[in-house]
Length: 231
Image 1: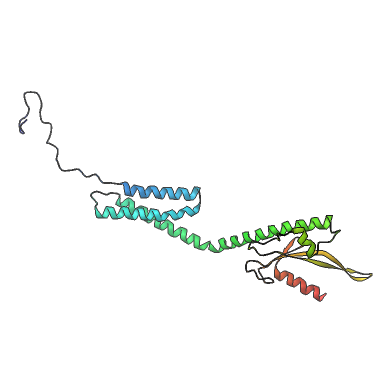
Image 2: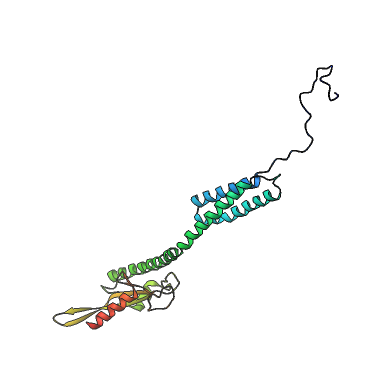
């Protein structure tokens, strides 16, 4: 048909202007949507699995920044600029809050870690104490073993603390005041288990000490020694 003719003999007719042959550009929103999806995935994984997955926010920041650069460089082909900016802003703000929270809780985390170390050492001491009590009841006739018998009781594998230091065993005598005969000593009626603690140096403040199934600090032990000497 010739343009300008209303219709032809076959019945065909123009219903509008011919389509423009200029290519139509559709903005790509993929990069911006990917950054949003990664953000949602990181948040969900951090809440459900472990908070350490929050470090995935670095991937979100990189993805959002890439989307912003693409939108700036070629806004005609890449859209979602505002979405990417919002995603980047939320991620950075959330990361700063989490970083501040983590820094503030570092002392508590270190303290909890130290408590777990001490608890593991105390558990090992409790195991040794149970062997000593069993020896006292069945073999020792009311007395704890001397060092030689203790080594036979434990075997070649001497107990260790959390820091792989040897737990030292020391039988102790228990002085009892008797009005008739004066001071009586009962040999091996008490015992001491001692760990040198994290620094591996014995007889300082971080020692872990058990006497008769009760834990004491080194300061308390020294105080008891002074009191006994005064008596």
